[in-house]
Image (cartoon, rainbow, N blue to C red; front, side, top):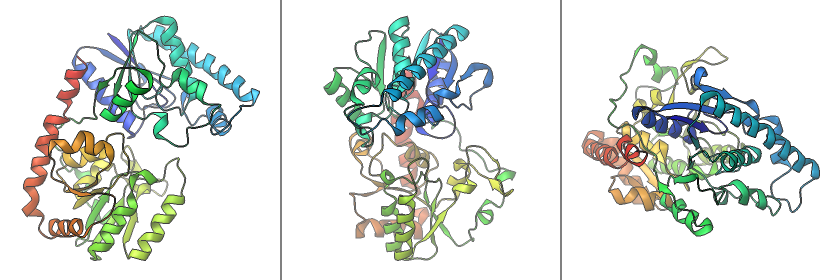
Length: 408
C-alpha cells in the first residue's frame, strides 16, 4: 500500500516526529511505501508534500489561535479565516492523495491536539468525503491541556478532535488512560500502541566528531553530568531535578538541560534559574549546542545531537509531572543509564508494572532517593546490573517488535 502520514510537522525530535518515523519503519518492513504531508518536514523531498500553511506556527494559524481560545464568542473574521484555511488545506490533502496514489492515511496527532484547527477540520472532511481507510495516531488530547478551552471552541473540538461516526477511521493511543477516556467520552475503541524503540539496534559507536565533546561543552574530567534530556516546560518537573542535585551537595555534579523553552514561554526557565541559585546547583543550559543534526551554530561552534550527549551522562533525571508516555525515558534506558523518575500517572499505569529498576519520586525529593542517587554516582559499577535489567525489560515490552505486531 501507499501510506500517507499527515501532521503539522515531521521534523526534529518531538514525540510525533520520532514515533511517526518508527511507524513508517514498521510499514516499510512490511513492504508498504510511506509518504508525508505536513507544514514542515525533514523527510525525503521526493516522498513529501510540504504545505507551509499546515504548520502550526504559520502566521495564519497563529492569528487564529490568538483569537480563538478561552472565548465565549468568536469574531466573524476568525470563523471566516478558519473556513478559508480549512478549504485550502482540504484541497491540498486531496492533491497529496492523488499525486502519491495514497491507499491509507495515518493522521499523526493532527486530529488529536487542536494546535491547528483548520488542518484537523480539513483532514476530517477528507476522511468523510473519500471514505479512505485511516488509522489516527493520538498522542495528546485537548482535555489534557488547560489552554485548549472556551465554549466557542467546543463545536470545533467536537467535530474533529477526534471526529466520531467515521466508519473508515480507526484510532491508536499511546497510553491506556487515553484509551479509557476515548471510550468514555466518545464511545470509540482504540489500539494501545505505546512509544517504542529499536532496542535491537547496536549502540552508536563514538566517532571523530565527538572527540573532545566533553571539554567543548565546558565540562572538566571530574565533573559528573546529571542529564535532564527534555525541553524546559513546567510539566517536565525540572524543579525536582534541581532539588535532587542540591540535596546531593557535591559541586562536581552539574545539572545539564539539553533543550530550551520552545513555544511555552520563558517564565518557567527563569524560576528554575532562581531556584538553582538558591540551592547552589550548577545548572548548565546547552540548548544552543544541541540540534536535530550535527553542524555549526551561528558562532561557528559545533552542534551535537542528543544521542551524542547521552554517552556523557553519569545519571539521567526524568522527574516529569505529566507525560503522554516518555520517549526520553526509553532513550535513557537504551543507553543503559541509571535513571530517576517521578511517578507520573502514565508511568504508574503503563510502565512501572513491567518491573523497572529506577530511583523513583512521588512528587517530592525524599532522603531515600537522594541517598540512592549518591550511591549510584559514587559506585556506578555496582549498579550496571540494574541498567542491563532495565534494557532487557524495555526490549521486550517497548521494542519495535511490539509495534510490528500491532500494525500488522
